[in-house]
Image (cartoon, rainbow, N blue to C red; front, side, top):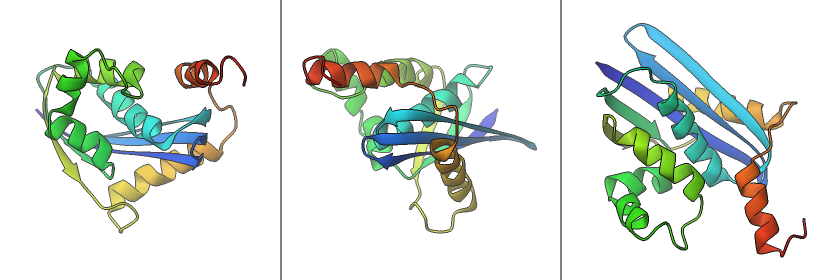
Length: 159
C-alpha cells in the first residue's frame, strides 16, 4: 500500500501559539489533521504534524512518501541523525518527547521524505499551512505540556 503524507507546522512567535497540519492520502481517500497549542515552537509543530500523521495510520509496513517544507525533520531521517541522537539518549537534543515516538512509528514503515519549498504554490503544502495556521489562531488551544515544563526547568521554575 502506498500512502502520501504532507505535513506543516506553524508558530506565531517562536515560541508562541502554534499549530500543525497534515494531509494523508491513500487512493481516493484523504484525511486532514490539525491541532493548536497555546505555547510551543515551529520545530515542535513540524514534528507534531509528522507524529500525528503517522499515528493516524492503522496498518504497519506501508510504503509512505512524506512531503515537508522542514529540512530539520527531513534531514534528521534522511541523514540518519535521529539514530545517533537516540544512541546518545538525546543528550543536548531538543524535543526528545516527540522524536522518540516518531522514530518508533517511522520504523514500522518504508518511508521516503521529500522536501517542498514552503509558500511556493504546492497545493497540498499550502493546505497544510492553512490547517496549521488556522489551528494556531483558533480557540481551545491545547497545552504543550512537555514544552512548557522544559521552559520552567530552563528558567528555574519561573514561568
